[in-house]
Length: 64
Image (cartoon, rainbow, N blue to C red):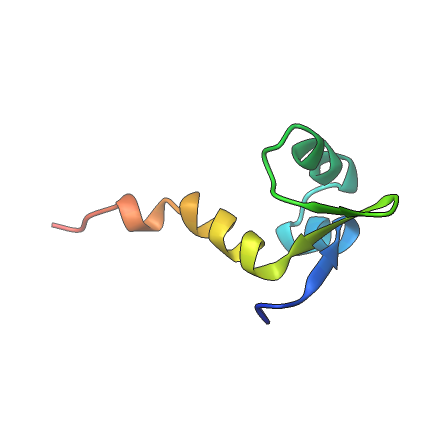
């Protein structure tokens, strides 16, 4: 993802394959970082990348 782009909540929901309602709820509850511009919420792509990286379980799995 480009690091300086802003995504709408719908775009984030589509990308994560979740409902728009869930995405709004996560933003409202502070679970997903977002910026309010006027009446609309936007998510920076770099924030979404970091948010996903922090929640990645793959880095916690060790193969023996």
